[in-house]
Structure formats: structure tokens, C-alpha cells
Image (cartoon, helix red, strand yellow):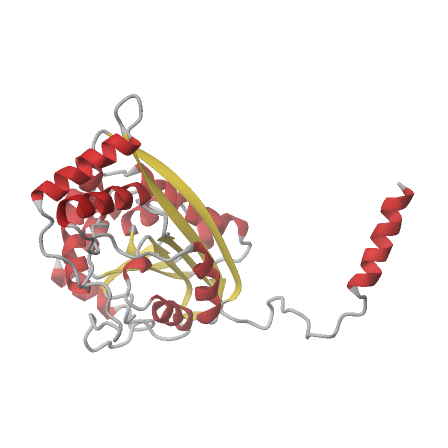
Amino acid sequence: MRRSIARCLGGLRSYCTDSGDGFQSSKLKIFDRHLKRKQRDRAAWLMKPKDSLVDTVAENLLDRLEDCKKTFPTALCMGGSLEAIRRLLRGRGGIEKLLMMDTSWDMVKLCKDAEQQMPTDNIETSYVIGDEEYLPVKENSVDMVISCLGLHWTNDLPGAMIQSRLALKPDGLFLAAILGGETLRELRIACTIAQMEREGGISPRLSPLAQVRDAGNLLTRAGFTLPGVDVDEYTVRYSSALELIEHLRAMGETSALLQRSKVLKKDTALATAAIYESMFAAEDGTIPATFQIIYMTGWREHQSQQKPKKRGSATVSFQDLQKQFGSDAARR
């Protein structure tokens, strides 16, 4: 498998560049990227053929392409839910060449094997091992960058988004979905209470996530034009807290904090499950888990895009508009 992927790299020179150490990380280290790669290796073996949550997020992300008249002949899909994006693409976006990238060899192999079972869609697909924190992609080389449930694990999210913008051609599109700060709020509450009761204090167990209010600033800071942000919340019901943890492992979404306690004590874990069920369980015995998804869209600057007028260039004042509409309302 490694040889077959290596052969793919030979045809990627038009948009790939040497990256040196492909797994370099930023100076600010919150997440253990090596651990996250191992978790994604494990997830490739545990992943369900069709995960309803992952498929829903991928479908909603790709729906945005149906609102674009523009086509994107060359696209980069990186990290996260690669297999779901490839399976649900179904010709949207007019993609002709698709470069799929992940830090995990096993995840890339899963996607490559799954593609062989898909109907022929005339998309030339290539695979590469790479890291979102240090993109092995040349500037101005792709028309679209897609990331579905992957970027929230980067140590430098603004830096990764800046690299994505630089990889885009002018008027290229950036599409991303990340987990928001309200994700797993029930588990956070239960774990905090259990640690306070059993250990007399709390230590970080769940990864920090971006808040909705930060998403627009991230796009602007990364230099994208026409930024767009919207949020969805999904509630998934599980038979027990153990089933929730198993699902998170299959998604590759378990914690990868660099500074974390090595082992969660058994009594603390049992207390967390008991508190979770006592506080949030429904009448049928199932427990809910909230997943907040932040969808982001942005474009690389191009002269054809709409631009705001310069400050002070308006020819009509708001006072005049207020008088006009006020008088119209009075006549009615």
C-alpha cells in the first residue's frame, strides 16, 4: 500500500512541493499530533461503513457547492471525514482532479479501498500523506480546499487556514466544518462533577474547541474574502456512555491533549457514566450527546468579487432613508 501511494506522488508535482518533515507542528502546542495520527489509524479499523452523523455533516458541507455556479476542476480534501466526502461528492462542484490527504496511512488506505467500490464518476483521485499544519501543496495550485471535521485538531488553526488560502488559486473556495465549543457539553459537565467528587479537583480531559463567535474572525484573519459562517447542532442518542466513547473512537475524535493525565481513574470513569445517566438520560434510558458543527466558507481574493465601497462614498444618508421610510409608514 505504501508503494502504491508513493507512486501516486509522482503525478502530483503540479500541486505538491517538498515539505521536509511532513509532521512539523507550530510552536504553540495544544494537541499531540503524533497521538492524533495513531487515533486516526485506529479509527480507520473501527469506523462504521456509513456513520449517520459524519454523513450528515459531509452532506451539509457539500450542499454549499450546489449554490455555486462556478466549477472547481482541482480540489484538495484534507483530514477528517475523507471517505464520506469522496462517497457523497456525486459530481458536485465540477471536480475533475481530487487530491485526498491525511496524516494517517490507514485512513488513506481505507479511502483508497472504498473508492474501488464506488460508481465511476470520472474524477481522477490521488492520495498523499500530509499534515494540515504543514501543507505539502504549492501556492495557487488548487481551485478548492475541503476539510470536514479535521481542522479543529490543529495546533495553529489560523496558520492552517492561511496555508489553505495560499494553496488556492485566485477566486478559489475554502469549505470547512469543525466541531464547535458546545460539542459534548453533557460529557463535559458529567466529567467535571465526577472529578470534583472523586479527586477533589479537575484536570483537562476534553479538548478545547473554537467558539462560534471566533469563526468569522478566523476567516478574516486568514485573509479570506466573502466569509460565511453558520452553525448546526445535532443530538445523537446512545444506549450508554460507553457506546458514546466507542463512537468517538471510531470517529477518531477522542482527546489528544498534549498535557493530559495519563490514565482516568476507574472510579472517576464509573462516576462520570453514572452522573451522565442520572442528569441527562431520557425516559427510554438513552443518553443524548450534543455535536455542534461550525461551517465556514471563504474565498481567495479576486478582482471579480464584490467589494465594499470606501468609507464616506455613500450618496444617501441613513437619516434621509429614515425620513423617507418613516413618512411612507405614516401614510399607511
